[in-house]
Length: 261
Image 1 (cartoon, rainbow, N blue to C red):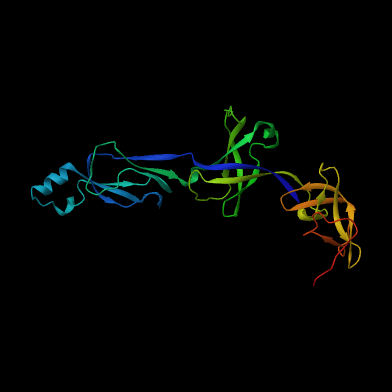
Image 2 (cartoon, rainbow, N blue to C red):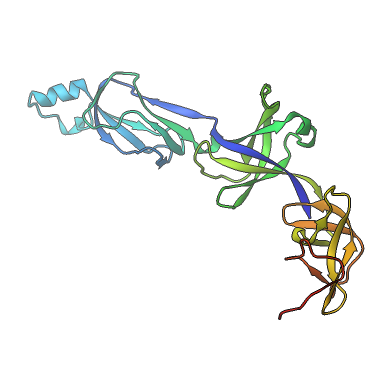
């Protein structure tokens, strides 16, 4: 069993390449769309220069060796996702240096975690932790950078982490960051729903069956807790003991129960 410090994180692409027009001309091909994944070297656009357009408008025929004259392919500079799509209409005239699209590179994906200042001593640089995605899948990440600013409102310091394995996710996705605090590999545990407590949370107990019809209140000493499990330090139960873990809330000591098989 282990418990975690649960924080929220958002996805960010740290490296975004702006794809600009190298020359002035007319867009003749658009091979991308917003959010499309591309590979390094893929042709994103083709631009026809004013010179080539002028030659064609005059009705002149280019030599076979010059078929590609004036056609400028715009290629992806790396693997990634098209995050902005500024020029999308075939036939548009663009000026040299015009922004055409933005490519967010896959290998620059990071998770930004806002850590409360009082918890910074429990999170070490280069340590690993678990990311839980909204679809309840998990991946491992490693802390890479502590940013040097503190949020003045909630007194948190942002840190950056990267996934240990390549993953493609949209930007600004809200995920859970689970930092391990304590862990025991061999101990006695029960479902957290079996544990009962008083109003001041000073006394803990479980409802244990002493036979097939009588449930008694058994005081317990607890250890590590998480969302689903609790460590029971004392007493030590046998594997044949029956503990009520559903419906025990409000059950009085020495209650009669009926086991339904």
